[in-house]
Image (tube, rainbow, N blue to C red; front, side, top):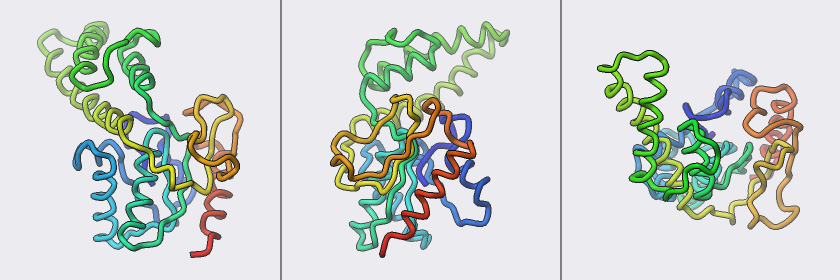
Length: 237
């Protein structure tokens, strides 16, 4: 599955499925770490992830993709097929199709500003200076010693740099919309939605009551993922 170790919902997809199905073989690709290791061209990142899966004999039966890692999950499925392997069915959980506006909203969220405050370009050279000041103020408010603030900000900034490197890469990449998932799980608040390029009715959409980003770990969500998983495994090879 393709999700995150950090900067994600309260529960990651990997953690939720690992807890629900401790006996099933699961493998996680951390989308942020993959971009940090392999570069900022998402298709090339996916190709390198496929190389590792093949080398480790981990060609997946099903690919799960979570939130803004959805695009990378679709690229990985396409990359497996390009290597002459079966394209695995894809299940997406609350996919997010990134735009510059959504990247800017993340800047606002992490800087503690109201949405719409940051209007600058969605690139690292512009974003990182915007975050440094709020990080310094946050640490001062928490009583961190002045001589330690610069070091702490440097450490925190590197984590944020990795996150925004991924977001900018995902926003600028084409989504391989020819890879149509077999199922998508969404909150019914309308904040996230199927990709508009998918033909109407081509994807099984399961809407659950609740807010986006807060579905993982709930019993209803796990039951829904189980149904989608069973459906994906029933597809003839």
